[in-house]
Length: 288
Image 1 (cartoon, rainbow, N blue to C red):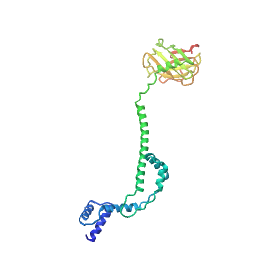
Image 2: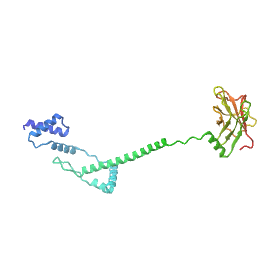
Image 3: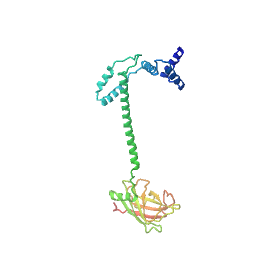
Image 4: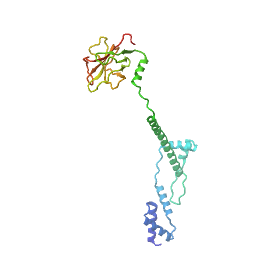
């Protein structure tokens, strides 16, 4: 093999060990290694390049916090105390890399592999607990969505609860007003000063045309039916039979003396002319 071929072979071996070869360069290298009779091979150059890279590698000292965590995890895994691991780490002499036939190093490589494994264990542990927490949150959301919702109590149930609760409850029964057709209406009003709410029950109250008129409730705190009673809410009746309407008091009311239902324009009024009083429910003095 001539000098030019030797230089070309060395170039190809060097490139193959460092930056890699193209398909054509790899073919040329195979031809030269097969026919040149040289005792050089690609593996020797790769080992040489690796030795040079390791010799130039600058190994930064491990942060104290990371070293402590790795030592603790390794101690738990290998059954070794943390102090022994620290002594093993710091007592290892620094070995210089020599540019000769490579030999396996038992200090740096063993420690590096063990440290990488320990770090992987820590990372897996963190991912496990994170995923467990995330799965718990997701499971809670799934349970919440799949749970059968508790139905809201009906107005009849709320009325009956108020009546059964006892305490200061005001009750009054409906009597007829001055509107024809309301003579047969029955029912009552239940009111709680403490809760500031109540329920009106009607049986036989005629269905109204919401486009033309509306029912409006009024609360009187004077037995003589003061000129400006408190608005108890506007409502419509859309079905026959028993109807329950909550008392929607606009102002705080204490110890009411009477309730009334008037027929007003759609949306109600601020002050009623009392031309159409459908029902009146005076509170009896003995009511509790």
